[in-house]
Image (cartoon, rainbow, N blue to C red; front, side, top):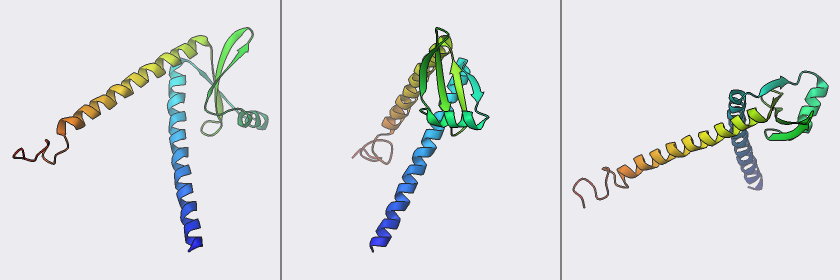
Length: 134
């Protein structure tokens, strides 16, 4: 009985983790699409040293540094493209604006879906009380 519980617990953990990995992969893809549209440049990690460096930094998060007295933004993706996205201040500003606009669109879509669902109400016939109103 204990072994069955352990196996079921292990299967549940694998299922949850694979779901989380899929969500993170989709988020990374969405972020990378926005980075490309904003003007970030992609730099592939081709050598073993570059791959080692890529795996040593925080993945899937925009980082900031200064290079030649200019701001440099970068985003690493060691899992999907094994690359680094780099951009200047203007590219980062465009990216931030696109994220903001994307969030507004998502909120509007959610509001429209909620309004559509509310229009039908809790009843089976599209309104509370059934077809005869009781």
